[in-house]
View (tube, one colour):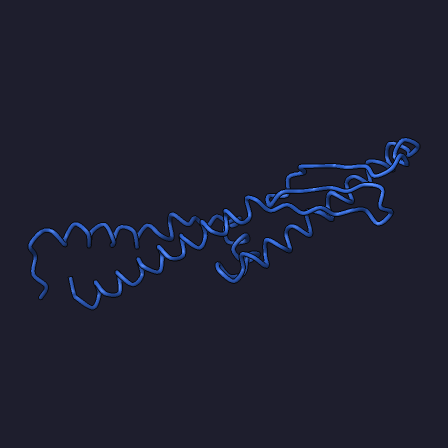
Length: 140
């Protein structure tokens, strides 16, 4: 293998490893993150995790008892949606410096892009280079 090509491959693998580490750190940070949003009328608050899952719903007074079912449901949906929107904003701010435009990445993944397809040639080259290292070959 050409020494220059090997150096480029080594650099690419180093960058890939560093990116994987950054992603693991981001995942850990996001795993522990929650957002709580309180409704404008201060009656109810919703807490969501980084995936947008509702983890807590809290009523701060007794007004909900006298509300019509549809009105109460709307209040819950609204505060939960607001919490998810806030979490999405925070996740984007955290992730974007490391992985680029989050919305662009989501669209690419939604349109059928597959990271394993993207990385497969690079990983194959790395495996081939590793197998050549111990074979007593000569560059030339």
